[in-house]
Amino acid sequence: MTPVLEPPVLEAVPDVRLIAVDMDGSLLDDQDRIDDSLWPLLDELDRRGVAFCPASGRQYANLRQRFGRDDLVYIAENGAYVVRDGRRVSSDGIDLPTMHALVDAVRRHTVLGGDVGAVVCGIDSAYVERTDEVFLDQARTYYARLEVVDDLREVDDEVLKVAVYDFGSAQDGVAHTLRPFEGLHRVVVSGAHWVDVMSPTADKGAALRQVQADLGIGPEHTMAFGDYLNDLGLLAAADLSFAMDNAHPQVREQARFVAPANTRNGVVRTITSVLGLG
Figure 1 (cartoon, helix red, strand yellow):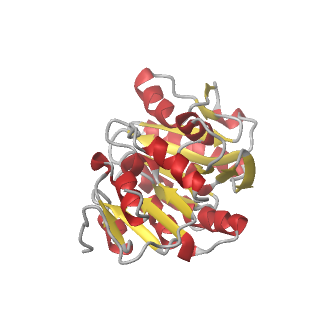
Figure 2 (figure 1 turned 135 degrees about the vertical axis):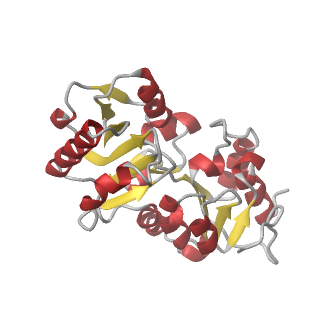
């Protein structure tokens, strides 16, 4: 297992031009907070010409709200939607028949006793039909634009993905119900309680490569941080890949380095140390 460096220190300061950072379990602490030390760091990175890229399963509107600025690169919806400097770089969604089939599968899972709720994630908004506050509180955490509708099958939007929240274990629960969609689509366990179903080509790693192409750089100029299985592609697209100390074992195994945990401001501390900014 890769040892944890406190914080990581490299032999030489690398030529980093892009930093991609997962949100939940990586940049955010366990209370869903961003450490105040990030804000001056963002200004310093901007001064040095280093692009900063939140890369998350969260909605673009949610990310934009959290950071409050357009001069960043945003990888949203686990790679299905990419925005740079306020303009769309790419989108990679699913068709309406697939969305309808996923909604039907979630409804069947509920009838069989599963405590789950679906979120249809569109360009304009995210949509739910489950209305209890316990579920809505979970959805609102990740979707700043959220609309309650009578029937998810009637949603009229460009659909990026369908996310399903399982109040039990997503990996052991609703993920099994959604496995038949694998192959033609990507079924990704993106957290302890979330499963995302997306286009087969939508991935944080593919999105990061699109950003690299847009910036005219490569993996050798890229630093990335992640903690969960949906971050594996992101880390693979960066030569300087960091798993958080709290990361899933597979993520720790793939990453070149291990950063301090999200509860110890590991992302900011590592960037500051590796780039010699402290």
